[in-house]
Length: 514
Image 1 (spheres, helix red, strand yellow):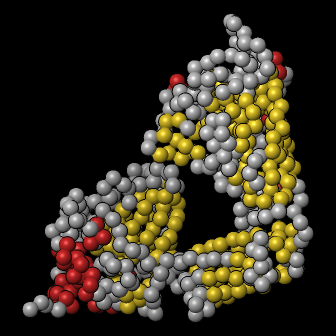
Image 2 (cartoon, one colour):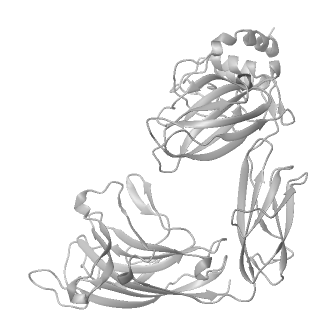
Image 3 (cartoon, one colour):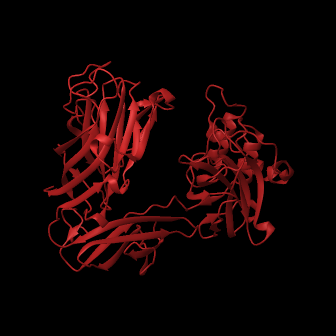
């Protein structure tokens, strides 16, 4: 006859000395978190995150305590190697660390298991080896392997069924490895037994924000009235604060109802009106959302002119369609440089690269936003006037294609920031620019960089300035905050060196119907 798991739990509570901090091992995975936080460590320990274990939100295990499992994981491109998380209360008895793991196999995440009692606590993530960067902190009930918010018989049975499993074994389930030592053993069963009966109603906090459909039936973010209701959803009972102007100061507060709905009435000025909210729950999580409400008539044309004789003008250079770590033979270079003397005085924005990958894309990008006159959700036709200095003669021959006629100038726009992304050892652009002579949704073909001059048999080819007029083939719609990105670049089939000097880019964004 099987024994009651609660009896096994009570015996394991008496074996508490086995739960003292033990040697460092590797974590394989994590259970489902009930709460998530983010932060940044930039030299020294991270800023403490305040949380509250409230009996109204938690059911306690034996002894009036609950065991929390806290995983710290690096985010983004920083160097952060997070160490174990320190848990503190006003009294040493408020929080007792039971196990700590500094790293997981092939990654840098850390895991801490602690026994806590109802109290206000602080969670502080540390950095190892002098590293820094952004991190996510995920909190779960230790032993809640099915993620249902309680530790019960089903969790104990699941771990018991996996006993003896080790990382790398067929059928190994890392979720059952509570202390993250790479095996499913008695320690995992002991932790879960000690936390038997613990539960929580806290869940990861999210928040939405929008204009009341009655005021904005077509959902374009534009209204005619001088006041508007903004509505959204979050966790029932969460506190929601309104930030008119999205400037970090709060103007009103409410509580989400029993199904998580909330509502604010916001006065509007003519033109764009940024509106933000911040929701927070009783555990200490927060979530935010932001929109821009437009009051007034139709959108106007947005005009912008960028002369690189005055510096980079906010434009940024980058490269894609090449290996992740290109060799020096790619001869990549970019930045504001003196113009070649044959095209005049002043400076231009140099983009240079040797097309060793048979498909090099060299590009400039710049964000336009509401400060430039762009309206949220508005669709625009992007019109460009581009002046560029090229030394690629017309009618020349080259490897893979001509140095002029096989290098395609492209221009367009996107609501998504154009970024190089790595995949399978190569770097590609995250928006659709097309391929060589073919355009895409984010950039269409303007022309080639052939400069109309005869090839010079010896010595450097002279530069000549070219001016192109171009209307991007695909309308671009600004995002919910009124941002879009301009994109100008060259897509090369010529397997040689291309060095261009962008001299001036003028843009008109002409509003078009949805």
